[in-house]
Image (cartoon, rainbow, N blue to C red; front, side, top):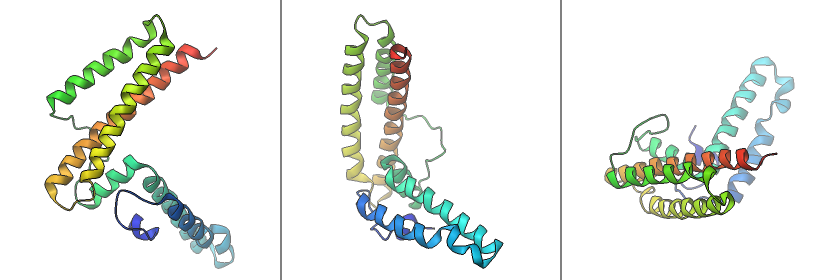
Length: 175
């Protein structure tokens, strides 16, 4: 199943989520297993499978990072399950500095201020990488797609940092 075709949208990184949601609701009505109850067990099972596929497609298309990974996979650069480390020394140094900054939050004199500062820093990085990704992801050129794949890898790191920050916030401020 080709996700972009399923939602009748162009194969491009920027998507109209209103169109995606409207198409999802249309397809959900058509595929819903209750509509196939009178057709027998096999048809119901098929409807359940199609509904699950539709739900998976929606999650991929709605989430920019998953959408980018899917687009790359469709262009034969599949990084969805890899554990590859980037060979970008500047990024690796930045990664170490961010992890150190994150680890210092719990011991900061003002953890709330430290969290806000860290969030702003990570948000800025996210915006920069996201803008850079948009320049490369829609290309059919393999070199551009390899750059896009590296940017997705960097964005994955940013997402992990955000998750870790949430855990730190929870541990500091949950009563």
